[in-house]
Length: 168
Length: 168
DNA sequence: CTGAATTTTCAAAATTTATTGAAAATTTGT
DNA sequence: ACAAATTTTCAATAAATTTTGAAAATTCAG
Image (cartoon, rainbow over all chains, first blue to last red; front, side, top):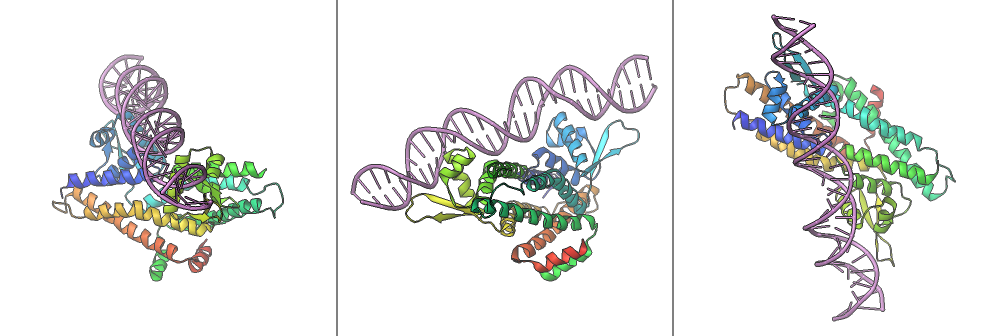
């Protein structure tokens, strides 16, 4: 397979995967393009290679910087801004997990915490069903959070990795 | 807080969380409603409590059954179908992970596997950047898959759980 | 077998989300 | 300070997704 074709397929698939997980397709495609680029790319490069508008490219590049997935690169003697992606895929994953936890999971947990005290007799089955479910989701969230923290904090989590291999 | 109000808030938030993660809001809300219901609910109950159409309710109930998140319940002497959600939140999580892996991650890995052989000199930096990224994503996917399998297969993964607590 | 109750389907409509592109703002070399 | 190059903004437009609702299909009690 030719490189150009392979690149196109990767960008396409990464875009589809992103949109299935609630990440806008263009953002995922810009990320994909930068992930496989040999050198930093300018906004114009990205617009051309993905056939998207300047506004779209600009907005998604900014969002990707907010997610810590790409960085601005200054090329001396050039007025344009260039961009590169973080290539360490473990870092990419932890950055995405961290951001989504902060933006989407934490607000849900906050709501759950507000739902702990419901008026009425705790033996009422309607009330019990509700509070039991909320409690169990909260316990699960706490557990998931700890697991995630371990993964995020351990830059290289050799211990957990090799431990999991043993269990396989 | 009154039970009715708390229920509404939970359903609302679960719907938002779902839509942020690429799951249609109604489906997440139907799931939420059944998660906190004390008894099985009929399609009409769901239509009424969520203010959605029969077609919408039916389609999402069907999808939730495909995801193994809810079950049909037969009430003797009643012609209507009733539905209950799986309440064990650990099972809920593993069912969702399993389904999303199968439907969304596996197809991506399949594409990655088709992109391993690119024509041209391996020392060409353009080619190297591409193949290095693809390879590292594949390695990461393999690792994530193993981790997930461990979590899914271990109904009660007491060992990993208590291990992670130690690391905290 | 009949027909009322229930479920399913799916084209059309509504809603939500993403994209464009041109004007405004900003940056930078001279 | 000026002006050309570049980036940012955002209202209008387009695209994608979700929802509706009524007709068709199915189920089931008598």
